Length: 105
Image (cartoon, rainbow, N blue to C red; front, side):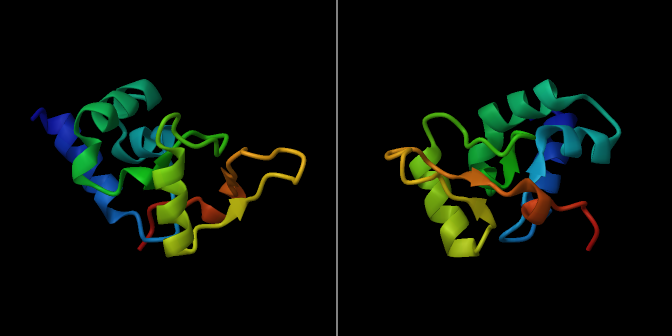
């Protein structure tokens, strides 16, 4: 595995339960790469870490993984913005203002 990928996964693994970082946050934290490079690492190797804690900046859930992600978020108490009643079948978004982690321990 490339060194950059190991570093991305290490950051993802450190995100506390109930919190999230964006792809761009991780790139900024590492001072290397960008959101697309972090996303590529997560797509290839992210199954080894809590992948649901690495998200898009707008809080939209990963396409095709929404149900699994929501189960994790609810179990961990991650702040969500629930869809309105009119949006039946629509999954919630992450409340980025409350859930975003800055990497500080």
